[in-house]
Image (tube, rainbow, N blue to C red; front, side, top):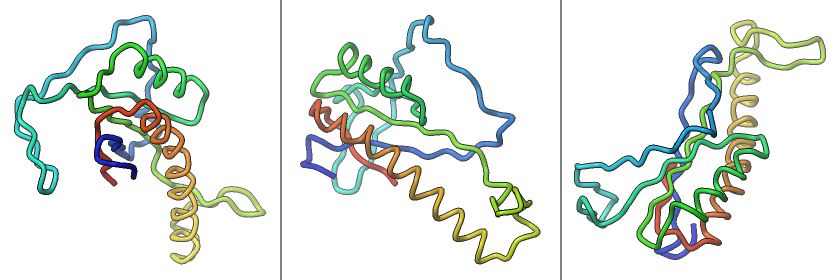
Length: 143
């Protein structure tokens, strides 16, 4: 994480594959205002101290395009950019013989694969976090 003014929020939300959806980029983006006081450790932010922008990101190139558009058009120094990455629950473990349901594989193999997927996601999100830092958007990281 960078300096205090270069922090970025990333939320990871695990969803079932059936719950995933496509985003219609032709529709205007809704601005979300939160009324509650936000507690981030020792820092206290009051409503109105900042704006929040939420950007859904993934592994395709459109995600970076969406983030860059957001950073160029919707942010100012007091904006918090929240990166949201929705991913499916791990149900199958890849093996040389094909995908095997995780219930039929040793717990150690499941844990190893889940950790591998988690590290991949963190690496993926790091590109987006670095881009936000380059724009010096005021925000924070939550893991």
